[in-house]
Picture 1: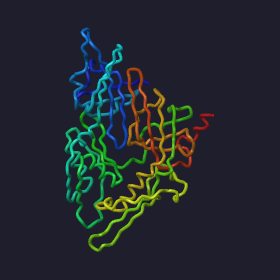
Picture 2: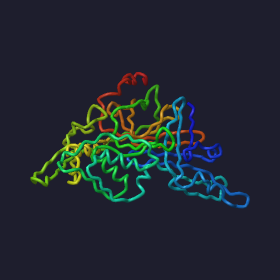
Picture 3: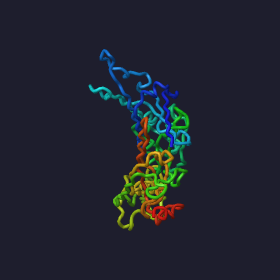
Picture 4: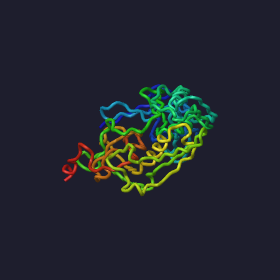
Length: 373
């Protein structure tokens, strides 16, 4: 399988000279975190002992950098589109050992630079998200899910001190959603997202641990029995002083499998939310959102076999896993991916998460045991 990559600096394709300067690229992608890339660029001294290659214009702070990769005959997939936020030099007296490291983060950092006091009156959370994403030139489009109006008779008011990104994540959390920025189809055209986790696969090939189609080098699932929780929240009406209380129903959560991860609901933990969590959002929605967040108790780490897996893994997508035991086979949400790219190889390591267990192997792969034995 052929592997190609390309770089863009300030939305322009990198020149051959710029490409030749880059020795290694590592991109770390994780949900609810700014994605980050590290580029390794060799530096050296000239005949007079002066360091060269340190102050290139294309490596200046806040230069926009985009990294894309192509596997086989597939289309180029962007791994990151963001800005240079940090640079450091590792100088060594041994020849060929000195290196400059350039750090790039996605364009969500532009929403996380300035502390402000925000006040929004009579706006739904989705409308606030659209307004905040629209303030950033590099965020060209948005993918924002609907958020219902609060059940309270009082007009919705949001007052918060912090950065725009902090506010977006706070609003997303109470809605059971996530706020993040993805690279778009074109350089410098990022996508602002305010969405729930997906629950269905979207075309990624399955990760197969054993069998003729094996494409995973290692797979390590674990289950944290302390994570699933029942969530309770209460509000006090300022009109008639009545108290409204809601408790999450674990049976109503969207699961990535046939059964919950806990054997008995009596073993789940209990959380009581602060009263402010229900001020401007329907209580049922708040407790369901927090219960869903805590329900992802199964985590699996691993790496794909180089030159065998034909797709690029990215967070916020669902992928199927096969070739493990019945409980752990099935659909997982991709939580984190580390892409390592050099002139000679490309590798992917991943962290998956799941809030369910399966009664059997993933559909379409039931005969996998036969292919093994």
